[in-house]
Length: 278
Ligand code: C2E
Ligand code: MG
Ligand code: MG
Ligand code: MG
Image (cartoon, rainbow, N blue to C red; front, side, top):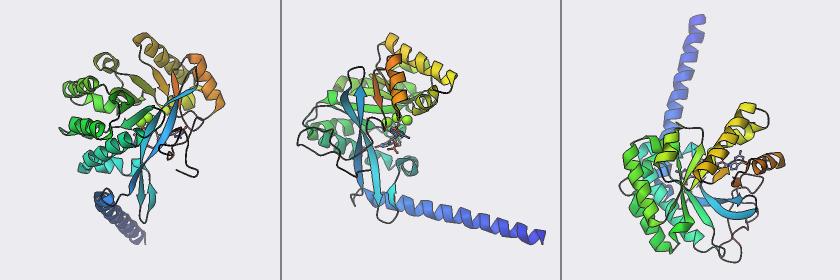
C-alpha cells in the first residue's frame, strides 16, 4: 500500500516534470514566432523628478500578448529568451520600437530601455543602438539604457568598453534594481553612470525596517556625493513618496505616479495613457 502510494507520487512527479518540459518547449517555440507575428508591444511607465514634480521620462516595459495564454509577464519569458539567445533580437525590437515611439512624443522626455546582460555581451548590441537612433532620429541624449548589476560583474573590462562607447554616442546609462544584485561599490567607481535606480524592496520595507531605512538613506547620500542622481522604484503610497522627498531622492517611479500603459503618440503630451492599458 505504502509502496503503491510512493509509486503514485513518483509518476505524478514525473508527469509534472514532463508537462513542465513540454510547456517550456511550446513557450520557446511560440517565443520564436512572437516577433514576426507582432505579439509584442511596449508599455510605458513615467518617472517623476523631485522636488519639482515633473515627469522627466518613461520606462519602456515589454508586453507579450500570447494568442492563447493572454498577457505573459516579462519574468515568464525574458530568462528563457536569454537562455536561447532570442533576447538579442527581442532586445533589438525593443530598442527600435522605443526610439521610434519616443521620437513621436510631443514633449521630449527620456525613454528608458532595459537591456539584458546577454544582449549587452552580443557583438551586435552597439550597432542595434546606433541603428535604432539613426532610423528614428531620436536624440541620443533622450535614450537611457537600464542595466542590472549582474550585467556589470560579468566580464568587467568588456562591459566597461561598451558603456564608454554608449557614452560617446551620447546615450545615458542607468543602474537598475540597485542593491539587489552582486552590489559592489566598485561599479559606481568604474562605470560612468547617469542614474541609480534603487530597488523597490528597499522602498517597500523602509517604513517598517530600520535597516532598510538605513540602506535607503545611505544610497541616497552616496548618490549625492558621487553626483549621480538616484531614483526610487516601486513607490506605491503617499507615505513612501514623503519619505523619499525628505531623504532628498532625485526621482521616483511607481504605481502612485503612474502604472505602465500605452501612450497616445503624437498629439500633445506623452503623459496621456490610453484608458485600460496594462
Ligand atoms: P524593472 O526594469 O525593474 O521594471 C520595473 C518593474 O516593476 C515592472 O514590471 C513594473 O511594471 C513594476 N512596477 C513599477 N512600479 C511598481 C509598483 O509601484 N509596484 C509594483 N509592485 N511593481 C511596480 P514588469 O513590466 O513586469 O517587468 C519586470 C522586469 O522585466 C523588469 O524589471 C525588467 O527587468 C524586465 N523587463 C521588462 N521589459 C524588458 C525589456 O524590454 N527587456 C529586458 N531585457 N527586460 C525587460
Ligand atoms: Mg528597469
Ligand atoms: Mg528596475
Ligand atoms: Mg526592480
